[in-house]
Length: 393
Image (cartoon, rainbow, N blue to C red; front, side, top):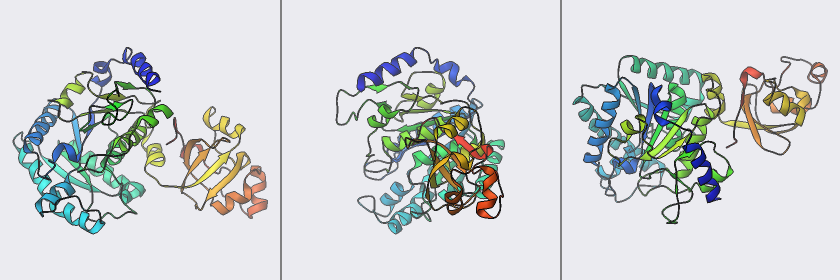
């Protein structure tokens, strides 16, 4: 497996000119992890933050729009209230976040002020990204801040988020923010040099992959699970972020935050870290929201004819092409579409409930009214509300 991974990156590494690729980047989302900001004693790493802000300021002053997704609120709060380790229960995490978020923002404000750059705080939960109205409002606010030359600093709203509304990790949040902001590049900074053929902490023979052209089964197998002792992320969450971003048609880079001027150097085209290449054309904001912001409430299995019509001919999903239905969804919910082998290939918004779809699956459109007593829509999923995924995740 490892040799195959390396041969793929070598082949693509000769073809990808990073300087040319990043020349058109106007808006960048930078995510920095807790381990890059907080010491093992849960104190703010002042020297690292100074270097990081200096780099961000240089990028901003070069004319690019910068959005920062920052971790570290809980870790900072843990240190401030005198705990010895990160708490496991949600109320204590929320309390630590409430203490730490103001300290974290104060540290950023103090440093960005030295460059005369205004910042703004945005705290988001999963609900803000799932609800279309709230999603649009958040997007409007974000774009207004960018027009005014402000650097938005975004974190999950850990003081109120519970399991049902948590994004869960800031790697995923940064990918969703990249879609929310319609950014041109996501850069995730961590305590790792990039994506390896295996976990370098356990395998000294693991090799850094410079370019990932497509997230396939081999790449997924190479991803580990566990993050650092002070954060929540790991390579698995970074790979999920890459799937969201590249599936939306945007590039993502992963690099070590300890490298001097790492953001500026990556944008200048230096081969630092791992570059995940966009898969296909850039998707519209509407389709990015459907594919990656909404929870999947059910699964529709289609036959070979429907699969071909959807993926090759850009058609809508009709009841006649359905061979299986699972889940308890209602009108307007997001569902996953799988082929007859069980592989996910699309997501979309349904026009009928699970109960209704079960009754009409395999039937012709002209039969729907006779079965249900009405036919509000000809399609189970209209093509405008259907997103073809390059790779399932």
